[in-house]
Length: 441
Image (tube, rainbow, N blue to C red; front, side, top):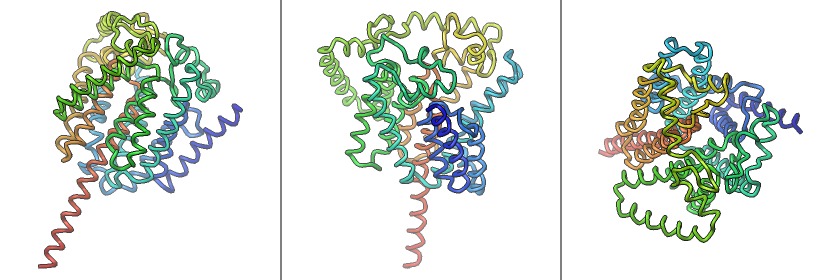
């Protein structure tokens, strides 16, 4: 069985590699599905960096006329800025340069370059039927499988099978948690925190493209993904999504709807009180003591102490921090930190890895993500959706850690590209109308 599973993953990566050269769009979809459906992509015959470089190479040739035009950089500019600025700190940090360069290289190739390819494809072709069907099928697969896992208390045979092929540590460290109502659910992803982020992000994506799918499909997806988000065992996603909803309503200036939504949530909470276990689980979201009986998590006091520990760690190099992805280097060499544990907040990793200047760079990165669409796009609703996706990513990462950056970059490029593609279509239509008027005169 293990040999068959390993052979399937290797064959999958080979098919992706070959498809990229014959059909870039289908190759891109298979590449994305690789990360949604295969928990351990490192088991493939081709390394992920090779697949990413193949994608970028073919896309560079196909879109060579616009590759270095200003519009080709709009969506990737914030992330390119972040990588470039943090990369400048590498020679100044105490962490081994070889480790830092390797991590930076992977983020550049598998993160920035693939985001660039997605952006180029979408601004030229829009949300194609093939890409739309891909997201629909994938979302139903991962969503329904996650709901099935609510009956197994987090025991995930699919992911555990891949765990056996790699290091076998997934079961003990990430999924076994008797304090969760349904265990920690990860669907087809290697870590529950990744699935939790993707689940909330998919809701935002489908809300943005709801006019492209039937009402029945949209409602069904919202029900499935909302239940997944509620029962995944990661309460941070509920808090991050709640903040994002409030942020959306404030941007839309729908104060009355915000108040009505608050009253509705209160009524739902009152109904939930009829089930003691479910009430304990939901109320733990608002429990900052960390003592909730069903879903224990970090208390406010614990996080405050961890912030102090992060500030202590950056004392030796306060301006540039200890190095690019130093927190990963520490965990690979020393294991969990005695106070910061697994560095479970983006704030802790920024302070430790890149210091005071890193904080400035990350704030600039967030502002670029929020405001660049306002200068490029015309549709206010599209701008607000992008800002909400950015809000969701940062709130989730600050609470839990940076588990979803790759998926965030892809979703951001897709939604940004869809909106810009509409501008291109509108300009072409207006140009055709002018030509038609001239001919008729």
